[in-house]
Amino acid sequence: MFQDKTLKCKECGKEFVFTAGEQEFYAERGFENEPQRCKECRAARKNSTKAQREMYTATCAACGAEAKVPFKPREDRPVYCSECFAKMKEAQE
Image (tube, rainbow, N blue to C red; front, side, top):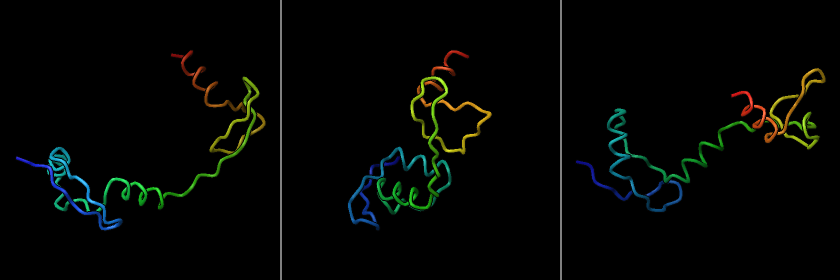
């Protein structure tokens, strides 16, 4: 029923393929308009409207390495780097 279509991005002018699978997905969701931007331009547009998170530097309570976290660390709570946090989470499961 659906066939791949080649569309032109209104942002960068590059041609991109609107696949049969994507068309089926759009139809299932009731979307009537075809995409007007290529995947890269859609992603760039989405990310440009997102507010950048402020990152804080802390020292990992387990290994002592520097950790960047999206919250302000408190003295009464330990902070872990992503590797140590993943190990702890794995051990709990």
